[in-house]
Image 1 (spheres, rainbow, N blue to C red):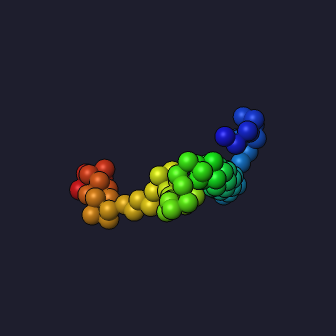
Image 2 (cartoon, helix red, strand yellow; image 1 turned 45 degrees about the vertical axis):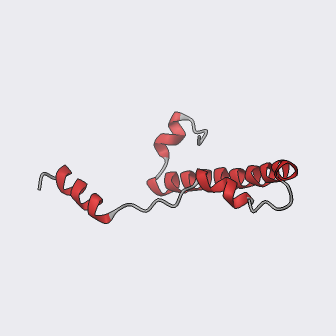
Length: 83
């Protein structure tokens, strides 16, 4: 994923590691957006001109907007700390 040698990985600061991971995730999302765009144009002739599908519709299942339930998180946190 990050193409680091073991010694380079050991010398990383936590901020550098987090920045590298965030950069990787941004690049991955950009690639997925590009693939969704080209998939849309490949599907469009088969779907017809009256279709309402967009590249965003193709991309949506890959990146769902899942927001954690605060009550569930609190319950799990209390369980972990034995409270």
